[in-house]
Length: 148
Image: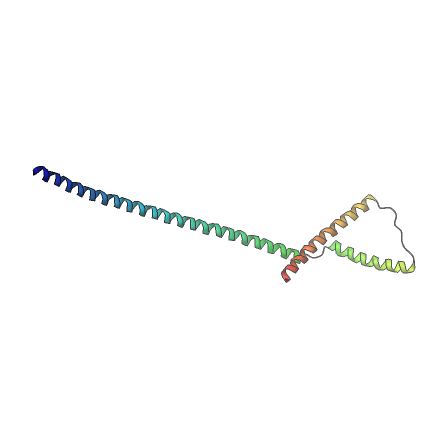
């Protein structure tokens, strides 16, 4: 009988120890879960903050690019015709009227061969005109885009 009582006491103490160990294990598991949830929440907050900062940086770059585009468009739309081109147009208009008068009268002037300097001047004039035409085209395309 004594042995039975002793075994029963050992079993009861083992049950108490098992219950205490289970409670400790459950408390440790709850602590680990709470810690993991907190780390996850902090990581999400950090990622969200980084996303907000990246979005703000991209929006600032977009705003800067839009301002640059606007400055370029305003510059193209407000660029006046170069003075050389206006002079050439005036000279060409006078020359056309003189040629028309000359053809009607039957007298035309013949020019001699062009010198190297004349050729370079003609080339520079054609390059200036090409540059002007390209700028004018870009300006008109922008204007048409704004109208549409």
